[in-house]
Image (cartoon, rainbow, N blue to C red; front, side, top):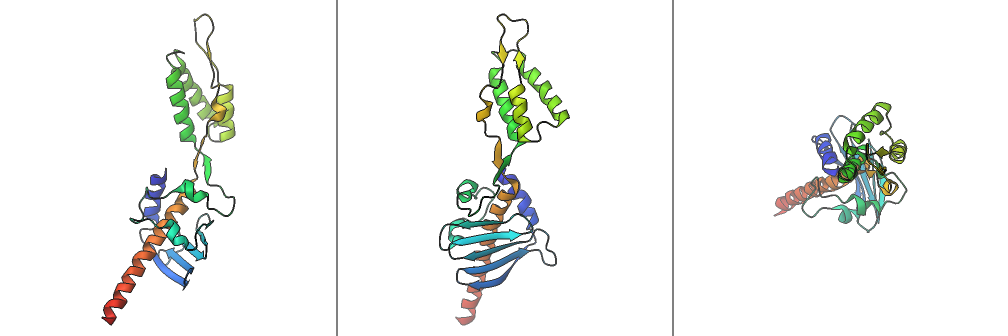
Length: 214
């Protein structure tokens, strides 16, 4: 999902520019926005040991090292696969939503589980497909609670077989049906991309200053 979110983010910031609102050592306030509009803008604010992301979407505060730019900075610059949402989530200073129920993951797990059991329970795949369509119609798979109820209630009896063989999702309660929250991933991309743009602008300005004094 991170790469998919990264693609959306890249389109959103295609015309963004950097405005340095404040900079005094590790005390920074940077704004990233398309000139003339606040849509999809975001701010990065740092102070010793902390980095805050805010703006047009969700906000997050991280704490780890003295200069948090060093913590988030990518050695080869931002790309859609360079963020580390799991490790970064451990550095959040407040309890915010970083994972959410993922219906696509639910369907994937059900499909894999049913596929593995088909040989022992002939006809299970077709039956499960019909039950999933009915659940779709009733909107049961949209939320994690009702999706888990569907798993608990699911039963399939192999027809015309003795002794009776019944399939159930016996260990589905262990399944993790969550993936990284879309907005959290978007924020992770924003932080690393913003730091990359800041580094690029700073390097260019430093080069111009050196050229003017040489």
